[in-house]
Length: 190
Ligand code: IMP
Image (cartoon, rainbow, N blue to C red):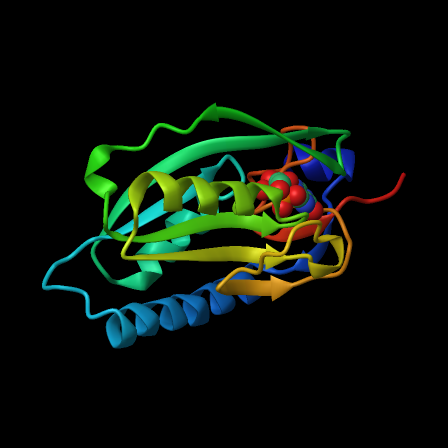
């Protein structure tokens, strides 16, 4: 079957396959669910407030909330970091941080695509803590690159720990491209 990628022979090399992602997201959802059910005594039908960080986490957030099988209220913020295309310089660009007042004093789960320097997650955790006084505040990230960390923060739940490679696909981009790939890839060098 031909598509534009195959015509140009530019499909990025598979780093983590579609099925590896699906299996890990299912396991991760179990971990997250167990945390909320065992330690936090969710009240009957109490929503977990899930805050996805756009754009990169949109696919992971969609898959995670469907695998969670717990009632959620879904919100999004949009944060980007300036820098050249594969290295962030740590200066955050925040186009949309609007969140509703009804998330005050709730269980909040931030969902990130990747914790790289940690600056995005660290900023957002502090902001939510200060503004919304959550009952609990946790961070789930599909990926974590601990070798790149510039601030002290680790996700409470993560899918894969990876070395210092630039990955694309499953929501993550390179110059706004490749988000639609259903696997995580590494760009081919050519
Ligand atoms: P931070 O450095 O932890 O603040 O991460 C900032 C953002 O940079 C992440 O949310 C991603 O959107 C992006 N990013 C970091 N590493 C990668 C990567 O390997 N591929 C694609 N985007 C990345």
